[in-house]
Length: 241
Length: 125
Ligand code: SF4
Ligand code: SF4
Ligand code: FES
Image (tube, rainbow over the protein chains, first blue to last red):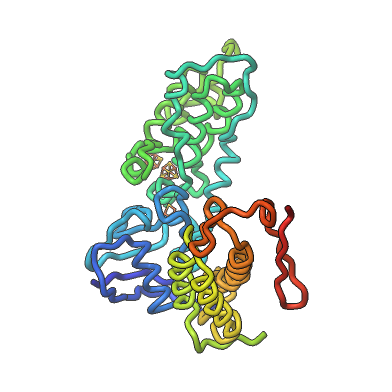
């Protein structure tokens, strides 16, 4: 079986698509990459860790769709490329700093926990799925908005934001919703590209829609519809969280 | 040290790994452990001929894996010498040649240290 891999080396500025022949079929992409590295070309570079779909470090694109190398089964003629929307370090390795930076901008973390609060099973279920994110970056890579807006907070950080905004223990929801107004929830085109690629069954698009309605309830408005109003000016002072 | 590439370390890594699975798993005996120790020593002695092919300074996973392999040989020797010196069976260390437990000599941690290049082993009982 033959597969094609996009190579990139900043030292030699080499950028090419290289074909490799494998003496087996029916293997995961990660096993194929390991075979190539060990037997054919030790300079082939890629990231991997757990080999079992848990750590999220082996995200790549296969025939223009995001996949985990350790879960994907190879087919004849597959084209393997690094993820989109991130700088390529070498071959299939991308620098994820940019993606992680957006979680800081969105303040997508637990800020201030309510004390003595009882959490029901239903309330735990509200963000159980989002809590399972393995940081693989597939959603981030699939999002077409980055082609026109580099500063878009994006599906990865926004789904994480919903994880904390929907947490009944979180006291400072206001701050989080404020942080995702600019280049955030309203800049998503709801195209759905980020949904099918998530290996954990998370649907960032839906979470962004949830954040929008939460923001709406809190008095924020889609700037595209608020003619004449300054950005974020939709916030009602009378609102009490 | 100057590393050449005459022996492929990936092959040695697979060999040591497979042999460890077979001879240094839960069931082990003196003969198997000693054979394995020879293989580990062979790899250690020839390490300078097993250098990585990739000489790049950017995200060189070939080099990282080589360093990991070299570290794993250090640990392999400690595990094997520890198992050889612990002449008893205890929990997941089952010596097929010495199946009984010996609390008098071995009811405690294995302590390993290096003197020059030699590993020294003792037990805190
Ligand atoms: S639904 Fe929104 S976040 Fe998801 S890929 Fe489309 S534009 Fe990006
Ligand atoms: S939301 Fe899904 S696709 Fe996005 S980083 Fe997390 S696990 Fe990966
Ligand atoms: S290697 Fe961990 S998810 Fe693929």
